[in-house]
Image 1 (cartoon, rainbow over the protein chains, first blue to last red):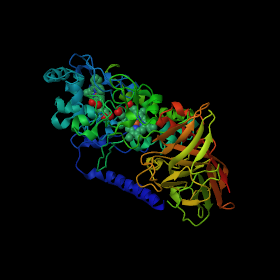
Image 2: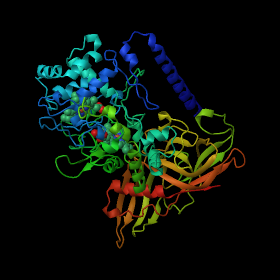
Image 3: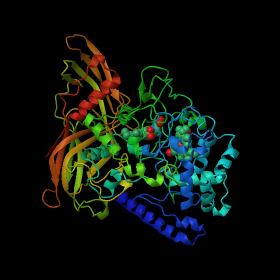
Image 4: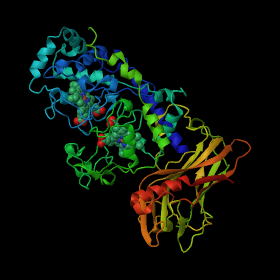
Length: 388
Length: 245
C-alpha cells in the first residue's frame, strides 16, 4: 500500500511537471488569439485538448455559439443544433430517440454536450469520430437519418450565412488567418470551439470535493460510497472527473477509447442487439463488438433522461434495476430476451443486491451530479433570443 | 485447500510498526491488523450436509454450497470516508487492491465447513479512529480464486447452493439448485471498535455468518435457480455478525 501512495505522489508530481510545461509554452509559436483565450476551469479539471489547426479565441467561441443556435443551419430553417441539444437538459432533448428537422426519427438518443471537449470518441458507438470539427458534419449533412438536412444545400447554406451582418463581422475576427472566409471548415471549427467551452463542474458533488462538507446530503454521500464500491462497479466505466470513460485532455498522450456491452438486450439468445443499434459492431463488423457503447458522462444525469443509447430506460431507478439484475430481461415482444445472459456483456455487469434505502441513496448521489449553474449559464444560452 | 472451512471470519488487530505515510491517510505509526477466518461453531454439520427449517415451513437439506468473497473492510463510524483532498484517483477501489482499512483477496469457501479451523487472510493497518462495521465483499469467483471446488463450477459465480427440500405440508424430497452472479456486501455492525495511537492497540474481531436463516423467505418450489441464489445470498449477507475479542 505504501507503493500505491508513492505512485500517487509520482502521479501528482508528474501533473505538476506538466503544468510547468504549459507555462513554458509561451515561447512556442502559436497564434496570439490562442494565448488570449481564458478557460473557465473548475478545480480538478484539466484543459481540454485543442487541435493545432483550430486554436481557441473569444470571437470564435461567440461565433460558434451563434452558429450552434442558428436555425439557418437546417435545410428548412426550422432546426439548429440547439433543437436537439437544449441547455436546460444539459444539451440533450428529453426524447428517447432524436427527431430530425424533416420529422425523420434518429435511431439513437441525443447526447449531453456537457464537457464534450474532453471526449476521446464521439457519439454512442463510433471509435472513428474523434474530433468535434468532424462530428459536426454528421448532423448537418447526414442523410441516414436526416438531422439538419443540409445535404446538397451547401452553397445555399453558405450564401445564407454570408448575408448575415453579424457573421460578416465575427468570421474575420475569429479566423484572421484565412481572412474570415465563410466555408464549412470555418463553420465547423467555430462550432467545435464553442462546444469545447461547455464545461460543467459545479455540482454539489464538486463542491463537496472542494471542501464544502454540507454540499451533499447524508443519503447522497452513502450513495457515493456505493457508486465507487466493488459491489456496484459503476466507477469502472463511469470513472474519472467526468464519471465517463474514453476521456482525453490537454497533455494526455495516449487516448484509451472503450466501449461496453451492459446486457441491455439479448434478442436471439446469442447476444443480439436490435439493428441498427448494435453498437461498435455497426462500424467494425466484429461479432465481439455487439452491443458495445460508450459509457456516457453521468454529470447532470438527472436532467438527461430517458436513458441509454435508444432511450429505452425511462428513469434512473430503472437504470439501477437493469444493473442490479446484471442485465435487462425483456419478457415479450420482438426484443424479448434475457440481457443478463448476453455473452458479450462486460465482466463488470454481474448484478448486485441492493436494499431499497441503498437504491434511494444511489439515486441521491446521481442527483448530486447536477450542475444547475451550467443549465442556465448565459454564456451557453441561445444568443438569438436576445437582440444581438 | 488447507483453509476450506470458514463461515466465521476472524479479524485480529495487531499493533506493529508502520512507517508514517503523511499524505496518504491519517494512520499513525504502529497499527497493524491481521485478518483471519474461522469456521462456525454452528448448527452441527451431519453427513456433510446442513439442515434448515425455513420461516415458510420448508425442510431443507443443503448438500453443497460455496461462497466467493473478495474483500474485507473496516467501515469508519463517520459514515462516508472523508477524503482529505480532491482526488479522482483515490475514489475507486479496484479489485484486489488493499488499503489501510481494506484487504483484497479471492477465495471460495464451503458453506458446509466443519468448525474449528482458522485462516489468516492478510494484514490491515487502519488509522486511529472509530470503526462501526466490518464488511465482507461477496463477488463472482475468478479462475485463480483460492479454494475453487472440484464438485461444482464456481468460476463466474458468487454463490452456489444445492440439496433437497420438503415443501410445507409435503412429504416428498425435491432437489433444488441456486446460484447467482450478483455481488453483495455482508455488513456486520461493530461495537464500535475504537483504535487509538495509545491505549488499545490490539484487537481481534470475529465476523460470523449466523446459520439459522439462510433459506428464510425462499419459496423454493416457485423460484428459479437465479432467484434462489439471490435470496440465499441476501440472507447470508444479512447474517453477518461481528464481535471484538
